[in-house]
Length: 166
Image (cartoon, rainbow, N blue to C red; front, top):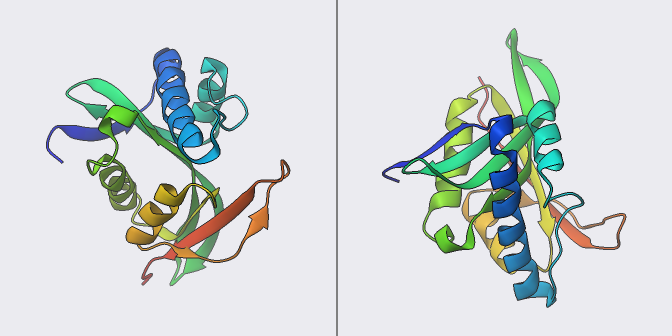
């Protein structure tokens, strides 16, 4: 992906990230649910600022323009041959609808994998109804492990991807 990169998000970008996040989540929820909704706080700069403190929050940038973001957080660790290896969760990823289906999301996930070679497990969960999300994660090698009902009665599919650890 020429001219696309991931860079650590800054607090000063929280408002722009909230706007793109709202646009992306509203787009997909309207498509699959018939109404707009997203995770609690997804459309507020405060949620994005807190997320920058609690995880590794990358903005996805094309020609110096923010077009999305990917947020990951450590969920566990273990020692393998004397080295620490980590379980990371993809907490949230969103891309402006104008740039979706162009390889940007795949690029962002692969960049995160490249930047964190100590990762032994990568997990993510997405609503069952969001067919394109589920297809996307399977295409990237994630395996669906079960079905769960969220606390707001939404059926979610958790996925995991293990890495060869030496």
